[in-house]
Every structure is written in structure tokens, then in C-alpha cells.
Image (cartoon, rainbow, N blue to C red; front, side):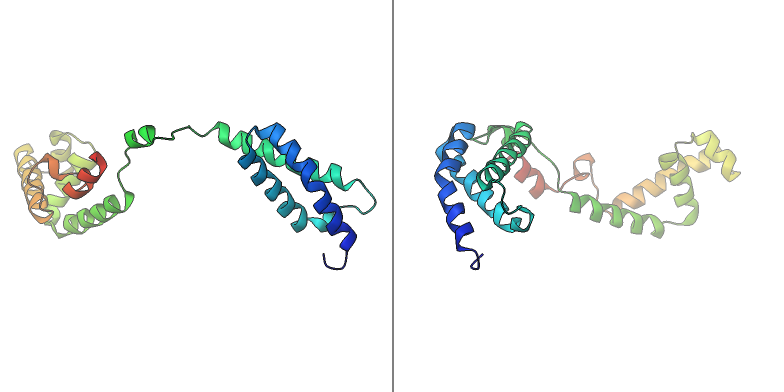
Length: 179
């Protein structure tokens, strides 16, 4: 750019016209100034694409117009929420806790005796009835019910689950999400 002072002067000379055009598109002076700045940055980084001898202003105005429309399409999908009310109603549990809980569950599951683990997986995870699970394992229905019950009690003890509220996010996370 330092080798071409004429091009530098032409870019600087185009700024007032670009700014006026940006204001007419955006309707806000601060947004227009951002558009002009983004246009100049884009033009400078793509100067190698500008064909010497063609209309520099037309090229710059095209860049500005394309930037404006790209941002308009992006902003159209955004929700105006200046006071944060909408964002305050959105609640998403953090993912890392559930991954850690799942790993804890898997570890505890493999610490169960194999007959209890098998019964629990058949009934709880695979959705078989007690009768079907008993048939698969070749034992009585009462035996399967007993194994599933003991497995659930043992898992709850290993995972420190005392009631349904212990499932899901911990109390500190729940408090933060309610805040």
C-alpha cells in the first residue's frame, strides 16, 4: 500500500461517500461508521482482487452493500433483548456435569455384581419386562425383580442419590439457573 500513494488517496477520498451510503442503509451513524470501517478493512485485505483501471468507488460501494446485506440476514435471526428479559427466561443445564454424572454412573454400574447389572440393563435400559428378562436369564421372575431392586439400591448408594431431586443438576447449579 505504501508503494501506491494514489490508491491510498483514492481510498481516503471515498470515505465520505461510503459513510453517507452506509448511513442511508443502516439508519444509524454508529452502525454506518462500523460498516465503513469493515468495508475498508475488507478492501485492504482483498486489494489484490481489485482490477486496476476499473472504478474503485463502485468496488468499495459493492463491498459495503454486501457487508450490510450479510449482516442484515444474520441480524434478522437474532432476537432484540436490550433489557435481558428474554435471555433471563432461557435456561440450559451445563453439559459438563451430565458427562461427569454419566461417567460416574458407568463406573458404578460396572461395580455391581454381574447378575444384578445384567438384570438392571435388561429391564431398565433395554426395556424388557420382568418376565422377558427372567426368560432371557433362565431364572424366576421374582429373582429378576429382586436383582433389579438390589441393583437400583446399590447404585443409588454408590452415586449418593437419596431422592429424585438428586438427579440432574446439583443444588448450586439449580440455584444459579433460577437466579
